[in-house]
Image (cartoon, rainbow, N blue to C red; front, side, top):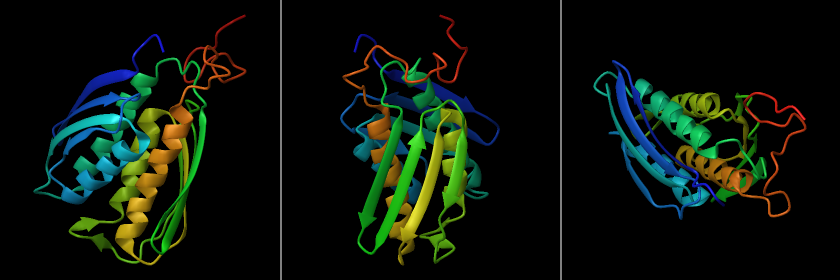
Length: 205
């Protein structure tokens, strides 16, 4: 590795102000504060199990509801990862992980393709986990996929406990990202695409 895969970014709107710092080649150290306890816990899982170092400091209009802060944190984290990945030279590109959590099993498959897409096959038994609406987790994943330029498929294969289902989604995302963002020792100087680039202009021969 000749260039550190790091990024610091800010997202500021009338609804939220978010600062994110990411080190893709970290050890899973995190410092997360969004004002939403359960969301903090999920982003911490993302950092811990992907081995990305992740700092997230968000202030939003949570006196209204949690929608804007949840969605915008997904945008900001995805944008930081997209920037930190740079030209995607040497990455494995594809990732897949099945993560169990007690009675629950969730699978995430992804492609760091430059083509944002979310396929979401997750149903929650309850409409809330703690005081957070469970419908917001799809919004977080959609925002993350959009700003990171990653194709993401999330499938909850089975589960009964809403907390477990949500957490298994984030842990599976983390493990799939960890594999996909890793440097391929056999192709460390190569962009893994026949186009010659990922998410940018095609490099002409």
